[in-house]
Amino acid sequence: MARRPLPRILSNGSAQLVRSRELARTAADSATDVLHPLITITRGLRRLAAAGRRRWTETPKERRGALLFLVASVLLVVALLPYGPLLAAITLMAAAAWKGRDRTPATPDGPDESQTERLKALYEALVPYFSSAEDPEPLYAHGGAWDKAFPTYAFDGGGRISHLVVRYPAYFTDGEAEARTRIERLLAAKSGRGREYHFTWDEEGNQLTVGVLLPLPVDIAAQRFVTTPGETVLGFTDPTRVRRTLPLTCGEQQRDVPPVVWRTGLRSTEPHLLALGQPGSGTSTLLRSIALQALQHGDVVIVDGGGTGEYACLTGRDGVLAVECGLTGALASLEWAALETERRLIAANRAHQAGHPPPDDTKRPLWILLDRPTAFTHLAAADDRKDPQSLLHVPLRHGRPANVTVVVADQLDSVDTLTDAVRQHTRARVVLGPATADQVESALGAPPHTTPVDQVPPGRGYARLGTGPVHRLQVPATPNPYDDATSDAHRQAVLDLLPPRTTPADGETVPDPDPAQGEPELVEPEPVETEPVPEPVETEPVAVPTEPAGRKPVPVLTKPTKTS
Image 1 (tube, rainbow, N blue to C red):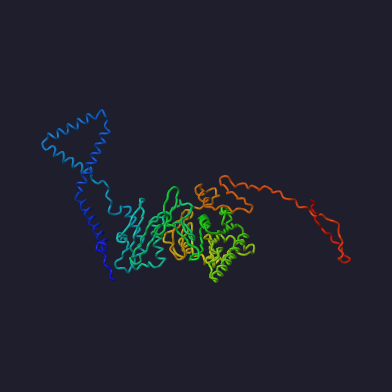
Image 2: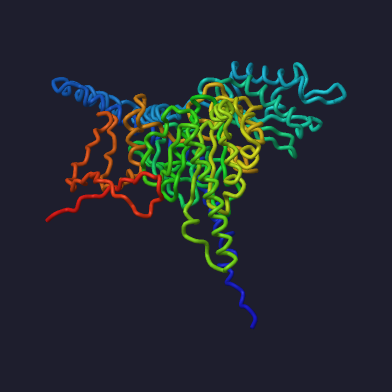
């Protein structure tokens, strides 16, 4: 059966709408040009009327009669003069045209003197990098025309460059990372330090676009994020780098912020994470944020090599299997984690071979969080004991099919102390705090597309998931709620996310400590009266007839019988 063609109004309706919209816009522009004098005079008359009304309101009541007499006299004189009304109308129209003119200051066509000097200086600085002696028509030459090299530019309120498009010759080696890095560092230094710049290289068009990035928000506190099981929010980034946003609460405001989401589980290609940074850069804050999100659907084992009590708020909570700060406890917890990983693998393998789904006890995620594990390496070597990092080989290598995730946080100067298993199997990387471009590239495996700055707030850095792009990152504020330097808003935000404490065996619930009132007093349970146990009574020795001669009889201890 042949298909009937669509009606013409449906087949080309969009084209007709576009054509009609263009015709309407053209007619409106033409009418505006034709009626511009009338629009100007009408605006002026309205302003003159407003000025007359304002003058009448400001005039005292005792003087309004004299003002009316003066206006009536002027109108009478104008009416009696030859051609008076005509001259009055012409004068009124001229005054209205003058009063209704557009007073918006004209935008200058080009940069001012200071901006021109800045562009010239930037052009002269690029001459040694973009010029060649064999070029017959060089685009860059000392004393050359800078406007040909910079077709587009913009400045901020402080007179510094905020947007710039740089043209460069085709023989420049833009495919080499070292050559591009030199140009990026030069442009960042000449355009103004203390800001983060984003560089976009167009190798086909021989153009480089330089843009200034806005600071990432630092007022986002810890909260419940709208994610699915297996998704962890590491932080937030620029809106141009990701296509997803999350609704967040910032004080009393609601806004959407683009996140950096790390996916774990059976189908994850980056099942483990390594976070590096300087002291005070926010790696412990990142681990606390991950722990609070992981406790919604799984269990957590925490090993604190720093021993500063950063995770004391998680001790005894539901889902927190252990919080270890010593070498002995760390070895025991990590050894159990390795055995648990093997048990899950064996149970899942047997279920797969039998054609059954995996057991439920292998589906619940298990998170192993280690903060500064290299601190235990020196202690283990001094005591001639096993390094705790050696127990991570099984969870790192086989953790993904067993729903076991390992997160390691350490300092940048201790990277060489990490084992090969940690460096090889942690494909998700985070670098926080001030770091050079070389350190960021060495940790993430790729250079950042922005210029790192020296002064950054805590929790600011870069993140890269596997072989993906490098993102700017700001970790949500998740401080230690027991720290005195923590603000009340951030402390309460973290306390609201903590799970309840585990119920002890005697049925009592340990109350949550109040940071303002100190540690709570533990109430001892009332003693329960029990029946006293009678002590054994020694009786007279009884000789056993089967004992051989020469041995002493053994005394027999018996309990006295309870008389009713």
